[in-house]
Image 1 (cartoon, rainbow, N blue to C red):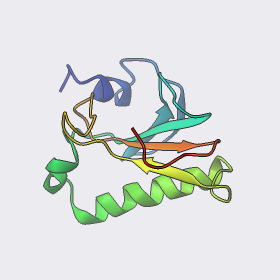
Image 2: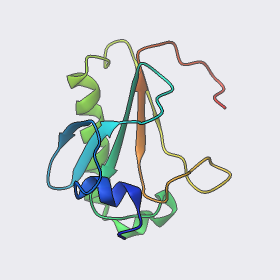
Image 3: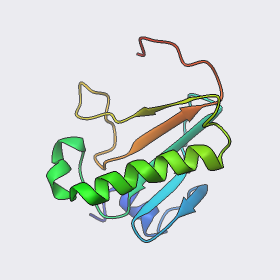
Image 4: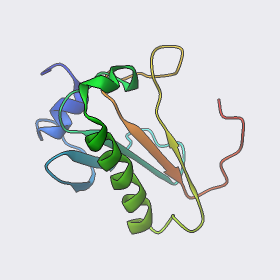
Length: 114
């Protein structure tokens, strides 16, 4: 997956403003933020999208959500609130074919989005 921009970020071949990282996941600032807090959380191994969820086991998927929850707490936005977005497919707004969760916070997030 050397062509995948997020795989290249995960392998440190491309720079990113990394917030935290472990063996399984990486969190970094979105290059084009839409909120004061806009962090992307990715699995370090390649999975195209949520539609490819079977490519990761349920335990790993759960750990990814727990990672995002803990990151929100560490960033100080858990109490005021935050939104998680997982775009899947072209019509869902996915522009990078690598599963990622957007953590958005720091302002009132209105509904409906988009």
